Amino acid sequence: MSPPLPVVRAADIAAASVTKSHFLNPAAARQSAAVSDLAPGGGMDSCPLWLNQLEPGAESTEMHHHLTDSEWLYILSGTAELRLTPADARDTSGGSGLIGATETAPIETVPVAEGDYVAFPAGELGGGYWAHTLIGGPGGVKYLVGGMRSASDVCVYPLKGKTLFIRRPGTSRAIVDTDLLEPLQS
Image (cartoon, rainbow, N blue to C red):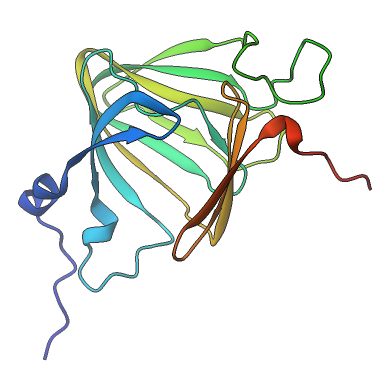
């Protein structure tokens, strides 16, 4: 018997699209299909691909960055605002933690449009990386999201002052207040 064809059909992708929101930002709503999860025979867990769509003015997710998993966006159609804040933004009130929900983080807005590619390498705090979110432009935006999905990841939400620890497979998760984390002394 032949193995299944390595093709995921457009109709199957469209049928798999569901509305997703973010647990820290319920107002963030996107249409999303986990394309790689539809691959015949599976085996695509380490290199996921999503097809996402945002309505005008809709936010994709809570502002975040990954310490282990890299992430990229490719704009298929429409326009959006990419909102960025330094991943190593620090509390300016004298504390030692990341910026929490009550402090003001510097936010840079970058317009993106069809054909643009955006890359977020995984990295440690202080490495010059960006926390990010996407806002749909006047006509909305359709885009691909991909990257690397490692066995474990740490995702930081600087505007919420939260850090999420993720372990796969099975996806166990734990979230803590970032201010409660203390750096290890070398």
